[in-house]
Length: 245
Image (cartoon, rainbow, N blue to C red):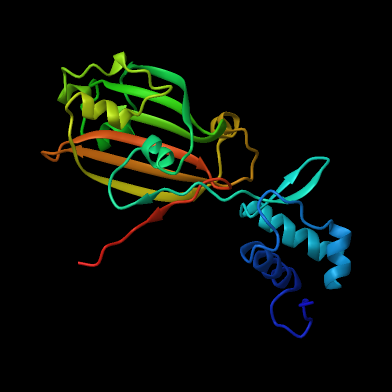
């Protein structure tokens, strides 16, 4: 059996982490299966309890393992992963991978946005937007918290309130309203959840989150939509497909 080595310059817990990752990625320890107990890992690799706990804690933090109170430590399910060659919505991303997507509507109304949104959407201080806040669920599990702002003054004939966004896609609704989006820009940051995000997603600090901010323009280049999306980093990862020109 491959073990950790005290002659290796890498810390013992890092060596143990790599061994566990090899077993997961090699399929020896499968998704949803319980891994050996801490005491068993100590004996298997001839390391201390502290080394085992540090390795497992970091793997749980990284989303590769999952602790279930009173049961043990399990290999985590694969993270949800949209791959973006073009602009798509969360519903489309997940449904294309065979998942069931639902939303819990927290807020839907016309509001005067904060200064950040005013700046991004190039609004005046009294201009209003259509705001939609949702918890996004995949296969019944809360995965993301979305805040979306739409500059309705640019499309005054759009009837967004007639759609049921608990089950319908916002982007598909825009297409039905004959609103065609042009370029979009996204920024992605690793972060820790604030109190609202922790509560809505059912997670505890210091569980990391992935925060994605997207600004979408109309075909004529005017900024139309801004979304701030916070995802559980233990369940969701982000991939981009790049094309060589």
